[in-house]
Length: 154
Length: 204
Length: 213
Image 1 (cartoon, chains in turn red, orange, blue):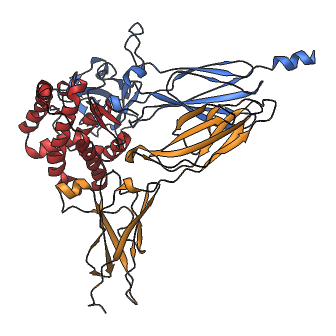
Image 2 (cartoon, one colour; image 1 turned 180 degrees about the vertical axis):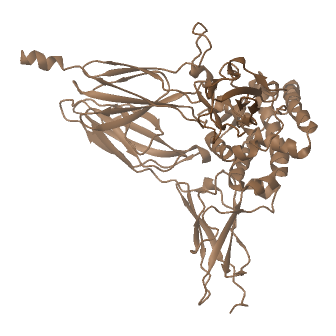
Image 3 (cartoon, rainbow over the protein chains, first blue to last red; image 1 turned 45 degrees about the horizontal axis):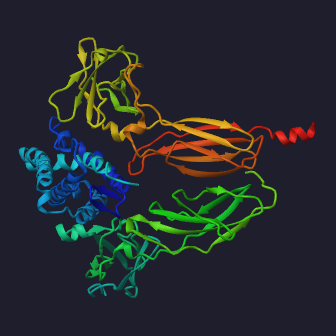
């Protein structure tokens, strides 16, 4: 299960996410021609505290599910990878739904710190044209899963 | 009759045990015609974010019989909407949808089948292979008053797993239950199986 | 002029070697190759001087790709006299996910009825022998082992899942050859590891030899 600081998430096997993404990776990553831009830069995840991790995971997953996955679906159909996509999307949806980051006052500074990290990613995303940004973000799911894997307890 | 409407399949239901999920329905009878069925599914993500999207089932697009193994399609612990339609030649029925949607956390978990053996003075267990999502919580104890119960989580299946060393002349018993973390549930314990070690300790 | 083919990284314990095949149809011609690499998210292709106009069909880029949390591309072109081919490029290479974890070191010590097993995770590649050693365990903290024990006499095998580094097999049969296979794996990560196998014989049963005397 995942332990993003105080947020625990059961019911998702990380290996299943890797298998699903692995089935899509070659097709998707080769579409990304902009090598000089990395959206999930190391600064986004550098020294993330446990407390921050729940907020950052929730915000990233929400963006991926609401925007990247939804708006990239026409490519998913084109590449005929709907099944693997569905496995990945539904399992990430389970994680996002179960992450209930606390919203009390004393967590304001942690939330803001996590949000600044998210904005690093989001601003880089906004600088690219939409299609390129969606392709790059989807191709970087391995970077996202690698970071999430650091909070996975087997 | 080529113009006749193909009736939609009825009585959809899912039979699910040990994380194997079978969608079944009543067959559509069209005398003199060959009927095929097409199954599609949608997870909660698709239902919420792109409800127009339906994904063809891995094994039943199409299928001749009135059932479909959807195990490989149900790959997250969320409600899945499933639908079926019948076709005969170019004609197709309306879609019939499973109600309510199916969630794999409702699967029936059965106590695992196991074989308990002694290898010399070692207690060894072999558990049936139920798939990658299964682990087994195994407890074993020496059959003697006040004996302590030992526990072990076993992940390897299909070949013997070492549990512990046994003392000569003693009886040891084992029971196991299945654990599926993906749905955060476990089965009932199996019946205990016991083995006896002869007087002189025979090494492995 | 055709490009080199099958350009890939071969990576084990973070030793990352770029390898390729010569261009098709140019066998027997004295070709040389030049390699460049790119750190994903940075600005330009970089050269490795030791892999400029080389004859061999591989280039060790371990130093250049040692930050395993980065991702990389590499490319190679063939040169013959005044001609040179287009660049042939790799897929995006992610050492953290794609390196193979080599077999653990397995130390076996046998007595009459027991075998003690001590496992040591493989070492990460290092540039110089004097550099400090980094264990692959430090990179993959949840590195676990599955140990299978096979009695060559009774032809029986059983396995055991181990999270730490030592295990003592007791109540074994004296004077018997046991083969121990160790597979490492990282739960939650795809990836492939290499098993290692070693055999050791338990000692003769001293009590029976005394009786014989």
